[in-house]
Length: 114
Image (cartoon, rainbow, N blue to C red; front, side, top):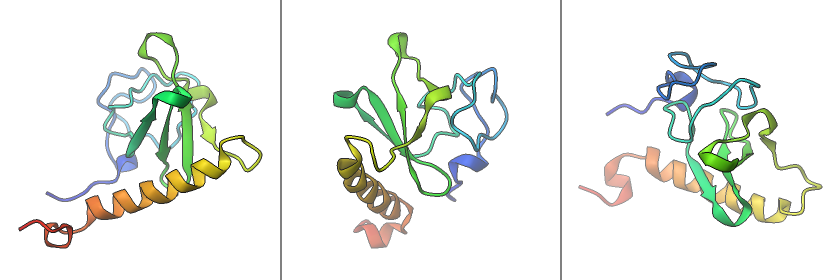
């Protein structure tokens, strides 16, 4: 199965802004994409921070806050900037997400599978 980058996939979660279209930005005002949308890159849900972290199409770490009712605050999604309290932790998480994605994209024999 060939890998298709998330920003090349079409939205499949009935978001009024993106349904049936690709999504290359993550802070659209009318976005209602779910974390499980086909356009969503590899995502780590952080219960302790009440948000999700993901790498955008430039491989930069982004966050999106979780709202009540299982919704996501896409208009306020952003990078974790150097002045943020959790910046040092985000650098470690970003590096580990890069490593996980590299492993997932590698051929099965390189992952130790036959």
